[in-house]
Image 1 (tube, rainbow, N blue to C red):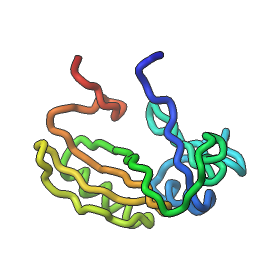
Image 2: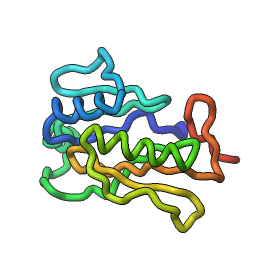
Image 3: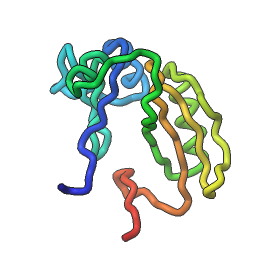
Length: 141
């Protein structure tokens, strides 16, 4: 198995509302999207928005509303200032700030927001790992 993630799928309560939220962030829905799923290219990874019940059914997992699935997504930035800017942008698009940006124990700077379905996104600047020209984190060997 190759060491990579191709796609992150989020189970959402309202596909149209979630799609609109991510479009307000300036992200573009792919023409491969349809009435059941929205695809958004995020650099080398694809974000898929899919009805929560349908996603649970597809994975053959019992569907329960209001549970935290212990998954967070991360958006790394090139600077501390970019963290503040991205959190403000997300809030303006309709996100709920879970944790304002602050210095963190590992030496970086981060905060969290939740999308309309409560999916937690960390926005972080890690001064120890740079992003390449395409915004991809390149970890040292």
